[in-house]
Image (cartoon, rainbow over all chains, first blue to last red; front, side, top):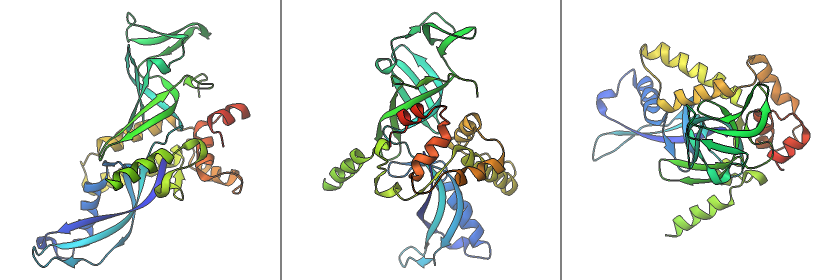
Length: 180
Length: 116
């Protein structure tokens, strides 16, 4: 789920950058340091939207650097347990498949895939194929690039990574049924 | 040690079925996938203007591609009107955004996917 969250970041600035362009330099440094990172507490920080406030720089007496506390608003992505999301299949394997939900990879184990979908190792690309299910001409398949609706069953957070597992063994979940 | 235990407890409380998002996110604005796409468009243009050849990070590119494929409303005007459609008192913002993101066809589907 995407959120617009206000966060705070500390930047230590070397005196060589004290000058008329200091504000521009600080914003550039903020973008570089924060965009594209992931924290366990706030999720993936996708993009900085707005800078709310650049505090007054405090000079550190021992190093000479100036420390700035920057308040900014950013788009963050954090997955929650039991949340239903649409994902795009990235990898298919005998033990399950991985789907990309934004920046996050969700793993769906074969135990949490309904029994009408069976792994076919001979097909190219490897896929889970539904037997007895016909929609139009092609049967239901889970293969790389397909859209799939899944429910996140659990998440695990490290300091800088989020891992998630999901299921499609419920009503209304699984490969996208109707072309949007 | 107690900090780790507190963090683990906070994580176990998080449950999208009951809209328990933990202390950090319970009151934060949620964004529709289409809104995220619009915002990322603007960010990419700004980046291209400022740094010329600069490329955006992997995560941003991945998210942008995902939003492009999963967005349901391509018209900017429509995206702005969506929030006005939902009455404020009945739904938590999280549920409203989930409804718009998943676009369920029937009421049963919506109830099954977004319990509260």
